Image (cartoon, rainbow, N blue to C red; front, top):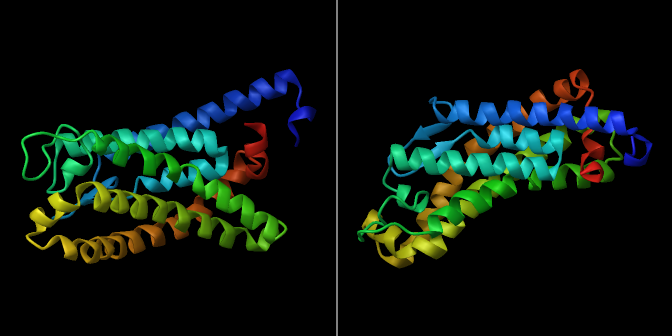
Length: 228
């Protein structure tokens, strides 16, 4: 359905419809933040599953609302790392002193928000590109959505750990008790150790949740970008 063919009343109804879904996914994100499902405490860093509702929201609602959900993801990350810090929480909260110093860093805000906002954008972009390549064939939709989910998950892990490498490389080396030259290998280890399981979860859940919701809620994800 094109934007031009929607009546003003229909457009308002669709807008309210989308805002309700946006609020629903926002509530899920904050609920997960306060349960073990959201952030899994590991010795060095918190693994996360909150990227999944952000990815699903991006595919269903488009990149703008996906970016809003990503911003909510970033906000929960700051809250969680400020309230229950782990060894690397200085990279996610400006309230936690950087290892080896007595003050936090504003770069933590960038690391929290920029990658997470992009998690709400890249799945939609990938899904749109793959739909064109596959001519939006229904039988290939699970593959398209699975790939979009994987890209969203790796967007989070790769950008977060990449920024940590460039901004907090020295502090990370001190924290781990290694030479700075070894930090890249450790970062890649975290990307593989956390990123692959998180991507697998996204690959499975994105099509499993999106396809039924598209039917039940009568959402046409292919048109969301144009409508926004």
